[in-house]
Image 1 (tube, rainbow, N blue to C red):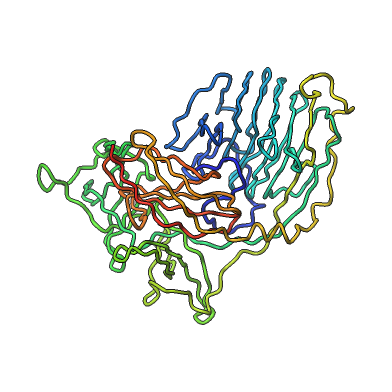
Image 2: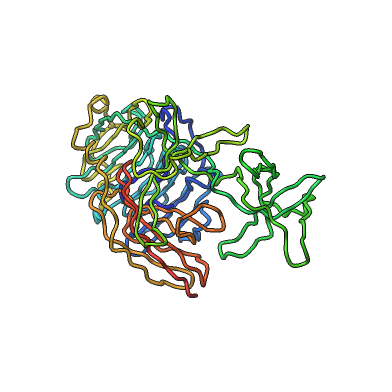
Length: 518
């Protein structure tokens, strides 16, 4: 689920909240989503993961680069890479420590509603974007976090921007204090003026719930006279690990079999915890079928209010390929979102509204109250901190902190910018697939003009069902190509792609069918 070299926003719909209330986040995000990572990225050569909590990443060692998770610090020691350093949800205390002379194409920091500040420290030097291959040297994609940048007094940093672009750019920040947004403690080659603007935005209100139609099978276990279901776990090669996530199976009069998680969804070897697998015979294990399980496999429903019934409903816009006609189709499915005890929410299809060509006229989209996001830039095409560029002599500006207060952050965002961020991107076309190596397929597609990112979904299911046996995964990239790895041989995968511009999502592409032969 990667974000690389251009403007993107979170790939999932998040329940609308006032982002100013997001607490400080120290250290990298520990959740499966959003995944924390540090990578070196090159549009041509691909990505080198340096640190990642995403299971699909093969973390590599690069000379001169060390990451210490204990103090959340990445050290660069005489590193010269014609690549961009990209980080995602590494927390508000993330630091880059400089030793010796270093060069990078750029630095991109993503916050993704978790946290993404950056402090550059150390007594070494870093030259960024000298070849001007990127628009800016440092981009802070705060994504509804503070997105603060600080360059400490001892660090030497040379920054370049391509013509007409700022050396430093911060987007979608919840921080309203201009003096805190970009702090440069060292001496600078030019006066640094932090320019700012703001935009008032609303979030779509969504709810997460288990669909009563989304059921799984579980292997049957017993313990202390109670019935349990085990969900078998597999490694990245599709082989069983011998571990299970365990659920107590309850038969509900209304919803049938309900799987209530035990052991906090921890993967365990059942025999170690006293669970006995129920056997039909020596070759076949008995199974619970059609179990609604409360675990991480929930769906997101956009919320609407029916003025006629004075009631809120969850809605999914479903795009799929009709297996009988081969044609692509869209429809709306409407659900009651019901709280089930203390276990979570379930989505129950509303009778007569399971498949609609369009929503009823009285359905009104629910949005959060408006809130403000802030944007900050340093509009210089080059800036030397504690150095004079290649000559690396004494800086020319007196004083330790020439960072000045910017224009009033209450300046309104212009209408053209807002309109550009809301324009729906076109549908993806021209998808091609090529075998890269064993269990790996590289896909490419035609670029979309106003796309800030692309979302790729691949699955063993034609309908991209989320049950774990279908291996459905969703990833993002800013490039019009992606390599899908660790596929299962002799299986057929289905791939679809859509473009996203800010919070506006384009239509899914036609489905590409890929057969993994070896």
